[in-house]
Length: 394
Ligand SMILES: *Cc1c(COP(=O)(O)O)cnc(C)c1O
Image 1 (cartoon, rainbow, N blue to C red):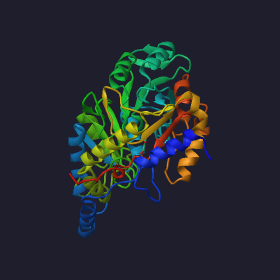
Image 2: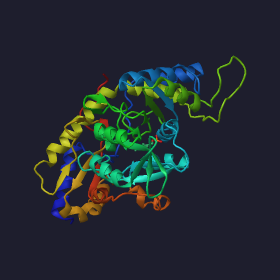
Image 3: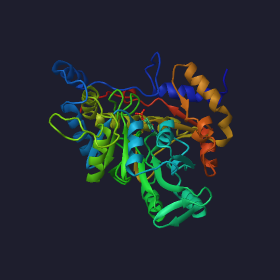
Image 4: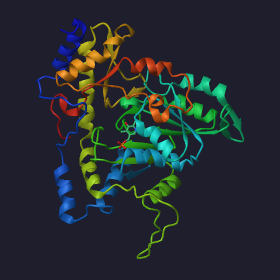
C-alpha cells in the first residue's frame, strides 16, 4: 500500500476526473466544431498545401483574437521561436537569456542560429523568469557599450531575453520589459503555451517585439502541427512573412528569391483545422478554468501540497495544471507519478531542466536554485478542456 498521503491524492484526482475513464491523457485536443467541414472543404477544392484561403483567414482570426496587429502562420512553434530570434537580428555567438524551465524547443531555436543559450532562474509566483533575480544578475555581469549589452565575463553580446509563459501562466511582463529597456535587450515572448491568457487584461504576445505561438496537438488550440509569429511592427511582419515563404519576390511567373528564406508556411489543411479550433477557444478556456477551480477546491483542505494558481495580474488559460508538493514531501514526487500513471491518470514532472541536458550543460547560467527546487516538487495534472462539464460550441 502506498502511504496514506499518496492514496488521498489519488482518490481526490479520481473524484475530479470522474466518471472513470480507461486512460486520462495529460492534454488531448477537443474536436467538436467545424474541423471536419473545413478540412473537407480543402480536400474537395484541392487547396491542401501552401496556398488557399484558410491560411489568410487563420492569420486574420489570430490577429484579432490576440489583439496583435499581425500574425504569420508557420509550420511549428519551434520555427516561430527561431524566426522571432532571427527577426531581432540574433547573430552567431550572441547570448540569449531564457529560463531553464521550458520545453527544449526554446533553447534549440537559439542554437539553430548558432547563438548561445544563457539560462536564468524562474520564480514561484509566476513560474516564469524571476525579474528581481535577473536584474541583480545583470547588474553583476552586464556591461553596456554603445547601446548594446555585453557579458563582461564572456565578452559576448547579450542580445535578447525570451520570456516563456509556463503552462499558460503569464510571466511578469512589465517588470521584464523594464529590465530589457534598462539593459538594452530585445524582449521576445515564447507564448507557445499561453494562447488565451491575459496579463493585466491584455492578451499575451504584445510585450515582446515578436512572440511565438504553437498549435501542436497538445496545446490549447491545435492545427495538427503549427505555430505563428505575432508582432505589432508592420515592417517586421512583412519581413517575417517574406522570410518564412522562401523569400520569393512577387511576380506573375518568375521565381526570384532575394535571400536565403525558409519554407515555413503553414499548409492550408492545417490552417483549416485551426480556424475551426479558434471558433471554440472561449469554451475551451471556460472549461479549463472550471477544471483548475475543481482541482483547487478538491485539494484546498489538504496539507502538504498546493495547486498552482494564477497571479493577481494574470488571467491564465490553465493550459496545464500543476500540483506542487511541499518541501517536506518532495521525496514523494516519483512515487506519486508512479501511482497515478499506474491508475491510468497521466501525470508527469516538469521538463528536465535544460541546463542539465547533455547538449546544454556547458552553456552559461545563473544560480538556478529556485527552479531546481521547484522542479523536484512539481507534477502536471490532466488538463484537457473536455475533462469537465460539456464542451459546448460557442
Ligand atoms: C510547444 C512548445 C514549443 C514548440 O512548439 P512546437 O509547435 O511543438 O514546435 C516551444 N516552446 C514551448 C515552451 C512549448 O511548450
